Image (cartoon, rainbow, N blue to C red):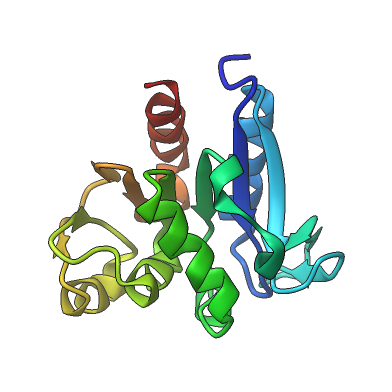
Length: 173
């Protein structure tokens, strides 16, 4: 239970990629962390691209990132919906400003760009987002997982084991 006492927020919205949400959620709980799902609306059920459901434990507008240790943003097309909600973008921006781990995979880099926190940072993402990341001021590389300070990024579901290992390592420092 290496993450006992740690609180991790996983952002949720419709059209999330199933593995990119559930794999980190289960892995972080397995490691002993308290994992809280946060969406635009508390208690609302959000559906993956294939209809799998997850319910938001809390609403982004009511979250104080001061009492969390990390924010994980899954991919799929949910990050494009997430960034339409200012409280969700604020949550990512504030978590970063307070030195919390902010971890994104696949298309979740859209949230980093919208929060304007990757300028001058080294990141990765799904390959089709390379231009988005570069235009947001980042140095984009094609690697399974990239850590630049407290920002951790990964490319795709195949990278989930490395992604979760890096999140755990960062939280243990």
